Length: 270
Image 1 (tube, helix red, strand yellow):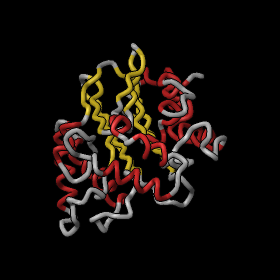
Image 2 (image 1 turned 30 degrees about the horizontal axis):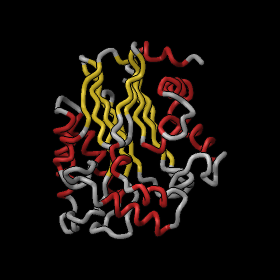
Image 3 (image 1 turned 60 degrees about the horizontal axis):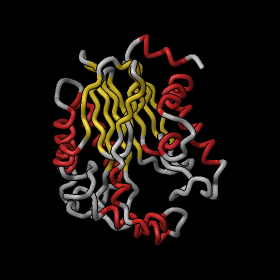
Image 4 (image 1 turned 180 degrees about the vertical axis):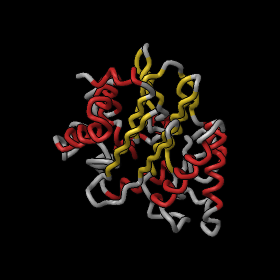
C-alpha cells in the first residue's frame, strides 16, 4: 500500500491539531478537538495527537485488532501525564481514522467524524460517525455558527459534557473503553482509500460540491494536497460564512491517500 499525506493548519503559521502517519500497510489520521480554555491538562491537543498517533502506528503494525490497539494506545498516553486532571471534560481528545491492508482486504476503524472512504468495484464505501450533530443543542449550535467567542465557548462546553458518556458520543481521550464504540470492519476488493480529518472532507460532508466518487477521483488525480487546495478555494469564496454557515472560515485539514495496488490508479485519469 502506497500512502501520500498532506496536512495544513486552518490559517498559515497556526498550530495544527491534526496528525497523520503511515507504515507500508497502515495509515492513521487524527483530528484533535478544539482546545477549551478550561482543561485539566497542561500539555494540549497537539501533544496528545502526536503521542496517540505514534503509539497507534507502533501497536497496529501487525495483527493486533484495531480497536484493541486503540484502547491500549489511549491507556498508554493517559499514563504519560498522570499529574494532569484526566477526569476533566476538557482533557485533550481526538477523532481516529485507521486503514490497514490485510490479505482479506482493507480493515478500517473510525471513531467520530473523520471519514474513511474506501474505493471498491461496487463504488465508494464511506465510513463516518457524526452522531455528535444529532446531540448538539440546537440553539447553541446555531449560535456557534458565525457567532461570538462566547457562543463558541458555550458550544464547546455543551459538547464536552456529552463526550464519552452513556447516551453521548465517543472520541479518543483518556478512556480506553472509547475504542469499543468505534466503527470497525473489513472490506474486500479495495483499490484505494482516503482518510481525512473533517476539515478535509467538507467538499462532500458540508459543502456538497462533490460526492464520494468525485472526492476519490480528485484524490487520485491531485493527491491529498489537491483535496486541501480545493477545500481552501471553496472557503475563500465564502469568507463571511453565508453560503456555508460554520464556526470558522477554515479548519485544520489533513488527508491520506492510499493506493493498494496498480488497479487503484485507475482513477488517475480525469
